[in-house]
Image (cartoon, rainbow, N blue to C red; front, side, top):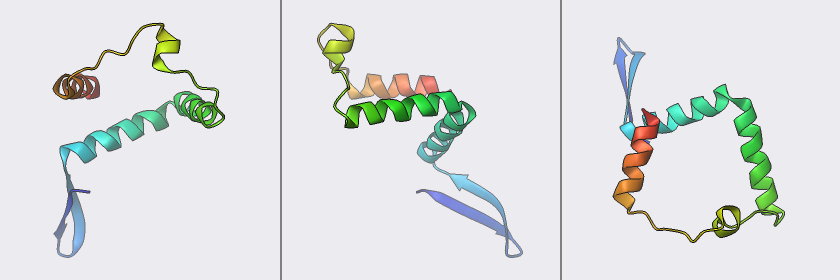
Length: 81
């Protein structure tokens, strides 16, 4: 974790975060703000553990198309704004 705590007279006053950590905290806060999404996500993970999940091909009836890593990161960055 990339963090720096700035102090004033020994008291923590400010925290500097990396962009990646900020985005991670922002995504976590969005999940907490929508508990129904979090509950559904956990239900889905449990279904996968129980062998009830679907592959992408089964869910969408189409082959997987590989995206370039750069495009995927750009799309993720746009969603985080």
